[in-house]
Length: 131
Image (cartoon, rainbow, N blue to C red; front, side, top):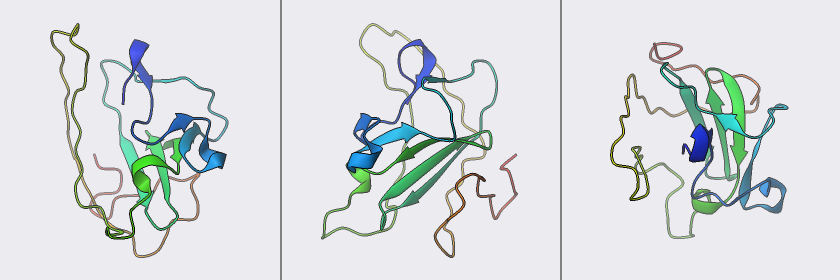
């Protein structure tokens, strides 16, 4: 999510810097928090989710930025290990009167085996980078 002052954060995961405790998220690859959402330009996000670990890794324009392991990634014993739905949109408090979000080339796909190299963004099986 984009928080105050255009800072990128992970929602519904747990507290920042609590990755090692099993219920949170952290920045990765030496990126120093905060990470800002660029304005007035297209940005590509790639998100890898492995519910069996549980683990989520996020790349922005090919650079890994977040890693997470808690919150909604932890499935209950009666739920599936597969993504059932995805949603995105604008969230704001009552003081925000308007906003715009543009989406393009949204894709969801599965991998044949778990990802092990998180330094490199997985490429789309459809068109490489999603352009």
